[in-house]
Amino acid sequence: MKKRYLIKLSGEVIKGSQPSAISWDEVDLFAARIANIAKSGVELGIVIGGGNIFRGASGNLKNYDRLYGDQIGMLSTVINGLVFSERLRTNGIPVLLQSGIKIDGVAGLFDIVKVEETFSKNGIVVFSGGLGSPYFSTDTTSAVRALEIKAECVFKATKVNGIYDKDPVKFPDAKKFDKLSFDEIIKKELKIMDMSSIILMKENNLKLMVFNAFSEKTLEDACKGKIVGTIVEK
Image (tube, rainbow, N blue to C red; front, top):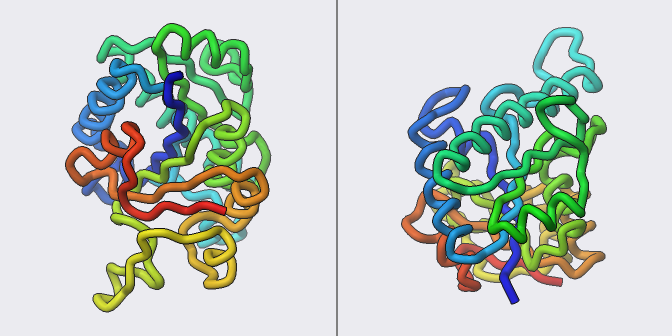
């Protein structure tokens, strides 16, 4: 039976070392890596964030309205989804782009039948547009989509090599966890993902693995079933 995973790629990964927007070099790199994984027979769903373009929950704008801010954020993820889908296709991979917001001619709403059809063709499904509602982040989208497609695990591919007790960038003495439970994340109030996504994964026995996507072969090893970074289970 084929392995099936849900990868959460943040906008931070897509922008690379740039202050914002899209780094085509990084997109090309990740698209090629993910395409090779798909060609090996692993089924992948990808949720892409939009923080490289706009962070809807930042609230640092004058007279900021969260509703409209989140809608801008959702559209930002659609832009990223289009970019990533196009790069995957250039690597010879069938791609289905879906969205929490129906955009005729661009992306349709979630459809499990189309998802399964794409996987049957050794394709990749890219989920954009969040869940289509404000106040729900792409973290929560990742948990929901992973459950809908019956993924074995959620991979949070980020710039950090796991979960720490505090920010390792700011605190050199930060302690890295090799393994955690969802209850420990809740108790320690670790800010690795939105609490709604943590609770959703806990209640549905869904595994989470957090690792540095930039490290050589970590993503590839994770898709082979190896534990890299920090694993979280119930």
